[in-house]
Length: 305
Image 1 (tube, helix red, strand yellow):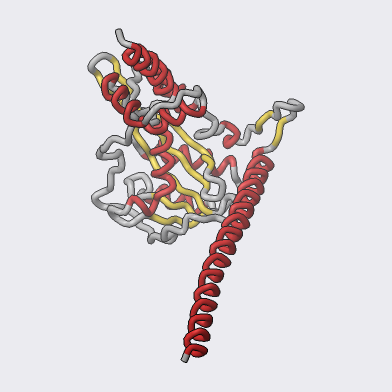
Image 2 (cartoon, one colour):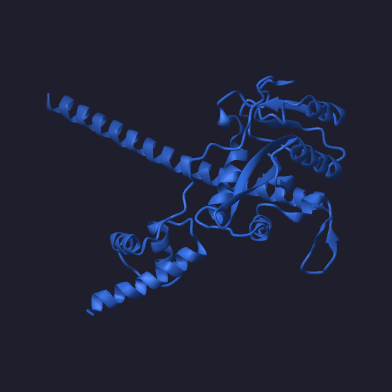
């Protein structure tokens, strides 16, 4: 075996290890990891060739029919009051909700698991979620009841698609009793519920696509294991601080996240303002130089004449 082939073998083993840790990364991002984390500097095309030989591929969002089922004769329909205004100034101002589908395999038999969740548009955290083997009304009703129980003083705008659970009159009555306003996406406009759909996409690309789950327990554990996606403190149980072991109320955690987000946004705004000022000054300098040259040229011409 030549030296080049031996190097390719070592690179292939390293790439397979990195891909196993982050299956959503393509060959360019894998090469970034090689460069920054491993100190290995190779060409992107070389990494691509090795990935093609070893069948190392990024997990992508596969096309599917989705699990949204519209009622032929919906009992209640709401207008699109959210109107793609995906910004909330404070927690519990705007909520999004949806149901997504997962699969696990028992031999050749396919089992389905459904996840219903409610997302807060302010800090993009999950307010409540419920897992069930059936995509039915109780799944959505339980999710809503958990959110209301955890946030008894919340009266947000609740936006969803036109799935049969959300057009059910009982669900609408629940919203009215909780003092909430209902909003629904337009037909065939999934972008009207964009942040919720994006949340499903991130969760599945990071944890689900490219894997084959052979037990329900394994699939449920995958969904629940990362607090980044489905934090346990949303159930109003509190979260223990690793420093002093004291329990901190979820509202405090959420307020801290909002403050942190606001600080980050302010910093970015200042940075962007600085860049704009720099380029504006640069442009003005070019204009001034051009005017000065024109003036000088005009003066020289006038003197010559």
